[in-house]
Length: 254
Image 1: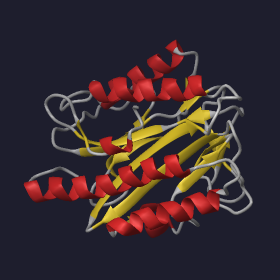
Image 2 (image 1 turned 135 degrees about the horizontal axis):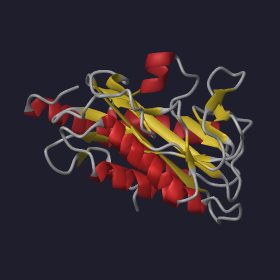
Image 3 (image 1 turned 120 degrees about the vertical axis):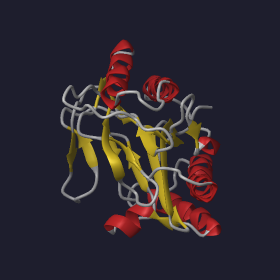
């Protein structure tokens, strides 16, 4: 969406606060021995306290309130009683929701407890790439150039990017134009970021895969060549200068 009046900005701020606070609380709540279902139900209660409704459930009928991916799962992991969190797990939580007609999206990967499996380096690279990416986005900048920046930075850290996942416009729906904000340069994409538009910018930084493939459950995605992936995501408003990070409260850059 494009922000045209103060009430729209306020609406986006409220929706973004709900998803950002929920993500932060879920990360803090996660403990070894807990099931992803238990973590998801905790997140549902936090969203409900804001009056917000789960976007993946509303939009796609997703079998959970938030997406929780563990280990070699890249994204869209289904919360379940059978998946028990362990010390050192690489976990990704993606929280998106609708509140009073406005939609916001954010996500983050983190290591649970001690980094016994050596995932922190990947997580830190993903955070740093998102921070650098957002700082380079403003009205008039080519979308493809931002994709190139993301891939260049990933390579500098010794990682790859997932080519069939990307950020997206957001606001009055979960996925809006501009869609397919990719982590690499699509030389055929001549679009530019527009001032006052709202987008969800996200990294997909991988150790060995370049494509995400869907498992038989119809949701969970893993790498075409295995390995691990970290994702970090903010909903932002594009300006003439530095973007407004609407989901800043999630603390994923901390």
